[in-house]
Image 1 (cartoon, each protein chain N blue to C red):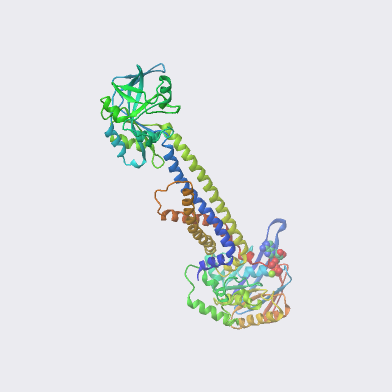
Image 2: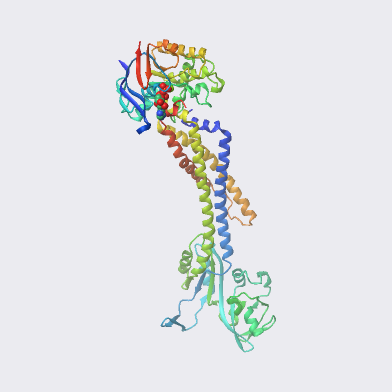
Length: 385
Length: 226
Ligand SMILES: Nc1ncnc2c1ncn2[C@@H]1O[C@H](COP(=O)(O)OP(=O)(O)O)[C@@H](O)[C@H]1O
Ligand SMILES: [Mg+2]
């Protein structure tokens, strides 16, 4: 038996109250842990989904034109010669960066002018798998592309020139049969004709050449600037982050995370207040006992320690239970939301952090009542009333 | 030598118009081994004086010595040591911890730290319980003991550290006559073994056990008789 025996027995003395208190504290901690995990995974999964709505990094050949303006009026670019990127080298440069797990799509493009009934049309040679990943709004799936050469026409260009499924577009005297017409998307894809990249490269004699590459990178785990600089280190091409796209995405994810942190903060504040009230009532009801302890020579630090230890014991138990409850709740919630968790080992560090936070809350909340107890004047505490 | 010397001590509660002079310029000398009884009407300042003498509270002014040592200007650590080893108190209400057995309650002063209670402490606690006549009841919880037995546990707790002086504030106040008598008899016995005792009581006949009686009125000592 020692000082902590007093703390333990005090908890046992009012078991129902201790249990009720712990249940509320555990629920609070479980909510915090659960919300945190859910928000992390939602953030990741949200970004994965968002990243499909367009690229956020653009890779272009080294600047070979300079834009001309006069009196603030853009007069356009002066191009000297069209230059190309080496497709395999550049794609490899992107795929081999340190953060390559964050690269969700690499879509190379070759832009060529074709001819339909004597009218010029713009063709884009694309890697179908990557292109369809980046354009989930298209009314076409990867499985629909069955032939080795596949060509689809954008809504506006088809409408304007009367292009139908089965009509031929000619490029360098080679005919490409249109297999599909896209529904209206309201973006650049409406004005283009998309076709299999490798075929377009061979009919135009530009083997392994592309004009630019669009990259979709996930940046919740690392900043986009790091990805850009890692790609730049691997290639001579210019690498540009489409900052507005990145910012918009991170803002959406950041907003969700901020919301979760607000809720967490509210729960933790409520826990501190509840703990403080719990300890305060515990101290008030034991004034005489504390008076006796002072009268038999307990020091102020001893009294303070005994009261704080009581809160700490409850906090450690609640912390363990709260973490476990929160973890499994988050797993269940994520399963219901159909979000896949990549690593499912129980993180011991997180559990320790949770217990640490619970301890901190408890001791911070118990400090004021404990100080009050330690400062009790024994004569007053023990006086008649 | 005096165990306690009080020179012109006063205790004022509150301030301004609502100030109450509970102890008013009291001087008192107490010899080792004495049994002093304090009588007086309710509100006359008995408890306040006892708390001052027992170093549970500090006087507003005056000087106070324990074994010749100033106990007003004393460090908190020294004061705690004094309360732990030399000065013991019991009250009208026993103030036992309800969830500790009789023996554990007697051991309360020894639980003041991280180091666990030693076996020798347990032996002393048993011996104290024997002295107050509670042999064989050391494992009972307070609610399994009668009022008189509970007060005996409080006495055992007080004498466990072999203090030099015991202060008792109406120790029989909530007991029936017979039980009260037995408590007074126990205190007399302890006094005969050399323990200095200062006791407050309402009952004139209990004062017969004392060597000296002081009578308080309005915070002052009116009669000081041997
Ligand atoms: N903590 C306190 N605060 C204010 N007044 C007090 C306090 N304790 C005692 N008093 C007052 O001091 C006077 C003496 O009280 P007390 O010493 O308890 O008397 P007794 O023990 O003789 O009945 C009373 O008038 C009482 O109201
Ligand atoms: Mg009194």
